[in-house]
Length: 309
Image (cartoon, rainbow, N blue to C red; front, side):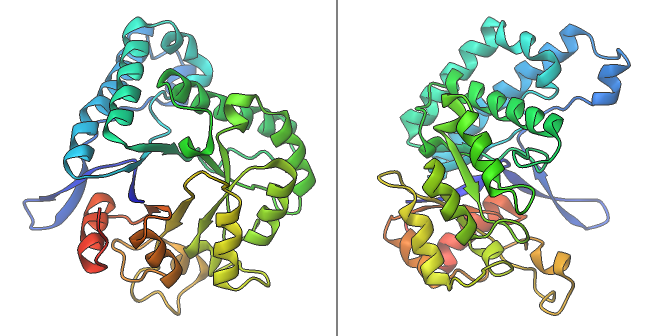
């Protein structure tokens, strides 16, 4: 169906010393927890940050549309410190209006919007405080999607990893306890260490949460599944929703490197597993491209692998 852009739109810039760097044209502003706790941010500063970040979403939609991008992963940093200052966003008419406009424009352009909360969003932690914080993080993302008017289905995926290993039953129990606007959008992604496709499809059977197949992660943690079987097992968890999958490569020269070197994402895409390549060519999946060069990698991949819009 679509090759997805993840969170940024980058452009090349040549520095005075001749070095070429990539710069994100989405001017998302951040806030620091320490500074907030030390009272360094006024309400006006937080509101200005939030308004800016929502306006940057509106600014990037025409860029995506002009380049025929039909899947976009929204940054999780739109509302930094949301757990402390969410009342500022929730009650600001400009923010609510602009989120509604953004959602309308995404839908008008036919762009699928997803998100991927960070590594600390762990529903299977042994610490209840971590689980509660993870729930709040997911509820924040669901609130953003609600304000954008997105349906409560995995098409608008809130995607996370399984978290702490060997805690499948706890993960199942916590997922079942989530509010519907989170649970109905939640997806689980196989990772390199803790939860492989086999484990996640078993969790799907108990929760109906679809599995996002990451082909790069699969190479590190396949259990007894071969690639084709794992691919199909994940697709089957999506029912009538277009499956979301991930693709990345190891960087050239890391083939014999450490685990961390090999799992790190490359700048560009040089290899696409046959199953995923055929699926994207035949409009069967949406495929997020997790390459460091972001849109540059996606646009080059279209040419290199003869992937049509």
